[in-house]
Image 1 (cartoon, helix red, strand yellow):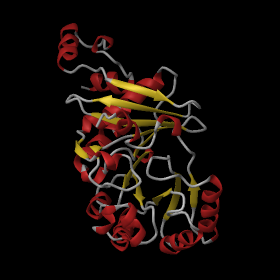
Image 2: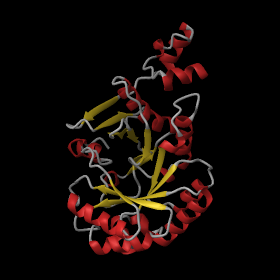
Image 3: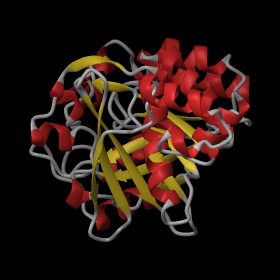
Amino acid sequence: LKQIKKAVFCELIESWEEAQVLPKELREKLNKEVPLKIDAEIFESRDNQSAKALLKLEDGQRVETVLMRHEGGRNTVCVSSQIGCPLACAFCATGKLGFKRDLKDYEIVEQVLFFARYLKQQNEKVTNIVFMGMGEPFLNYDNVMSAVKVLNDKDGFNLGIRKISISTSGIVEGIKKFAEEGLAVNLAISLHAPNDELRQKLMPVGKKYLIKDVLEAVDYYIEKTNRRVMFEYIMIDGINDTDDLAKELAKLLRGRLCFVNLIPYNETDMFTGSTDNRISRFKDILMERGLQAIQRYRFGADIDAACGQLARKRGEL
């Protein structure tokens, strides 16, 4: 088993024939019963900073995964946890697809393996993983945790646990359960608004999980783990990017062990992203009020990198 793990997750073989350490009969049996081929289309951005893959699964369903390249050799794979999503966030292309099914743990791992093989050809490696693709990870909790453990396995892929981040739209039970796992995985909360009225317009899940309940769960997580939490805030032009909302957000989060990640919105037919100047102004207001904030690089607009955009455009789901 150790030899097989090494071949699949370290040597990144694409056919069992490459695993010469295994007997020929076993290699033939494995090729027949558990082939390693990953059926996928890949779309690369013009600036070579990102790539999106559309993977075809055993049942014919398709799932998206994105590679984001950062300065300094950091390569982040954004993985999906579900096919489609039941939460129907107004700004999310995946939400327009509806919910098909949960992904199995190996289907999540397969997304990372695809880009690990892709990067191997360029003498590079996957350095980080974020569960920020299609679906809500905490609604597929067991498969997500199982995939994390496979990717962290020291005898296999061996990715450092602190290099893995999970983003949730605020599933309170999932956050509290996650706090008990004892894993140093990073937690991110998709907030996107500083008050319930606006958040519920953008994210229907906000009607079930009010901001005060989400923050109570986050406080419990911080108390249990002493780990800093990231609040994600997608910047949408004229919707959630005003100075007043920045001040409200700073007041809401101030004093917590956290920071805010301001994410440029990849334009869809629903909304337009905030300008870089507006994002900078929003960030300055947060920083002036004692809240740490970062502005994420704008990835993959020319390859429909926002979750669900590509599959929706191609009518694959």
